[in-house]
Length: 264
Ligand SMILES: Cc1cc2nc3c(=O)[nH]c(=O)nc-3n(C[C@H](O)[C@H](O)[C@H](O)COP(=O)(O)O)c2cc1C
Image (cartoon, rainbow, N blue to C red; front, side):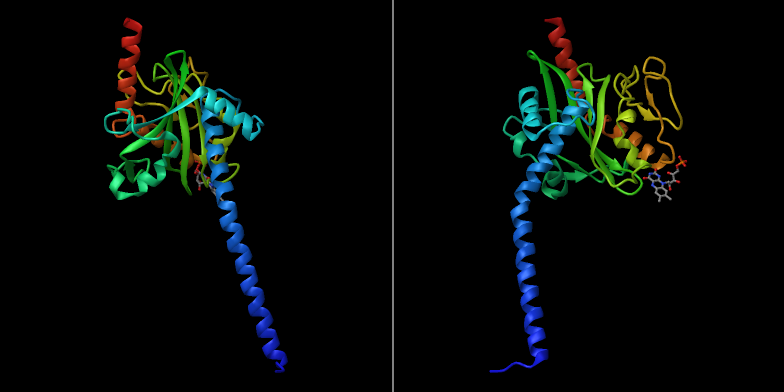
């Protein structure tokens, strides 16, 4: 059977489409596992940075990141409302974002300036131990900037007041403006600041201009030039997650634990 030139063209184009779609689907499926591994690695890298165990932007291999993480960091799944640990939950397989998106494992958040709409029943936090005692607590945070939801980690010292570090591992803010949340110089402004005032109100905020060192301006960090909306988003999300609907019950429990350890 002889095909006309037009029929040839259609058969060729159709064949090419099928071949390309098989190639694209195969690579999407094949790469999924690698993407997932890289996502976990990036989270680990950010937890280590927030906790001050590695420098911001430090170049490290995947093996080095995993080694330090597994050596120094312990994950814990906690009930957000009580701050109690769930001993049956597996921190390694826990996906907080999936939990927050699932109506059976989350609830509506009260209206808040951070733009947090749903609260997961449980959250994944990390501890760095010094012997038997918790030395650093790393909390996951999220909230609205100008263009996007920012996801990151806030690390606090064992006193639950002094900030150890802040990192963002995902956002869609403009590079050079809101994207300056990733600038190591800005991130260096955070360690040593105090997240709470003397009454345990979360008061840490990004200022509008420049501020002094932590001993002069303990509750403020330099503003982000030309990115007031992102900066305000950072303030709101920190105050939300340190507050009563966020990690306040956990932090109160850890303070009690610390007090008991010091009395013993
Ligand atoms: C293309 C473009 C991108 C912008 N990206 C951001 C951003 O990522 N974060 C932000 O807060 N403001 C961003 N802005 C500026 C805001 O629109 C707004 O003017 C700014 O937040 C006000 O901050 P300022 O008072 O420090 O100027 C952007 C503006 C433009 C034109």
